[in-house]
Amino acid sequence: MEHAQKTALVIGASRGLGYATALLLADKGYHIIALARTVGGLEDLADVIEARGQSITLVPLDVTDEGGLQRLCLSIFERWKGLDLLVHSAVHAPLLTPMCDLVDKDYDKTMNTNARATARIIALTDPLLRMTDGTAIFMDDPHNGEKFFAAYAASKAAARSMVQSYQAETANLKPRVILHTPNPMPTATRARFHPGEDKSALATAAEEAKRMIEAYL
Image 1 (cartoon, rainbow, N blue to C red):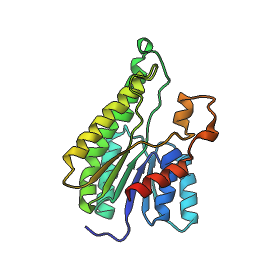
Image 2: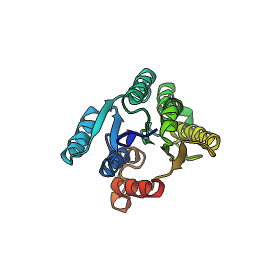
Image 3: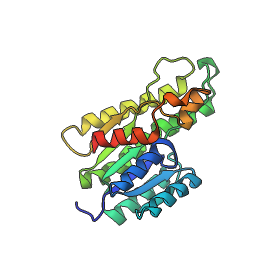
Image 4: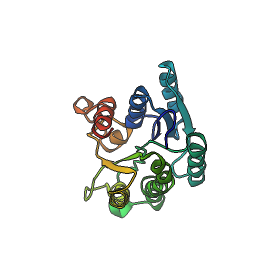
């Protein structure tokens, strides 16, 4: 289905890779649907995009809010009749802890944000992406078997498995499903896992956004 301007839903758009990807896609002519919990970060993104004469819709929403995701996807259908691109870069980084000290509350939040939300995002955006023969890009960050990473690694492994199943199920169909592993960047997530790290050796979020988008679009 054709619509006047391509649309990109960027989840986790208020900072880091999501923020940089939204800027780059706006430069490429996409209308950005920017989703994040952090209102201030979304407003900063909107200021930059709108100053360039480009368009953006802000969605201050937690990815674990299933009702909110449902309402968002209905609104996308009603307004644009489909979605051309999904970039899911939102993630929760729990405190690193030994397996025997894992706290249920922290584990549940990590699984809900990184795994369950991924399942809901796939289910809710798939019909919209099919309408436009669109593309869905999900971020991977493997830490399998690393000490103190149990909750985070388990949540990302679950999300990875779901995306890989989705890839297999749509291999000869639409949408195109991509599982992308960014290079290390100086993000808030990485800083939580690697405090005091020399950031000069890391790729910038803008560089990684460019590498990702040029590879797949």
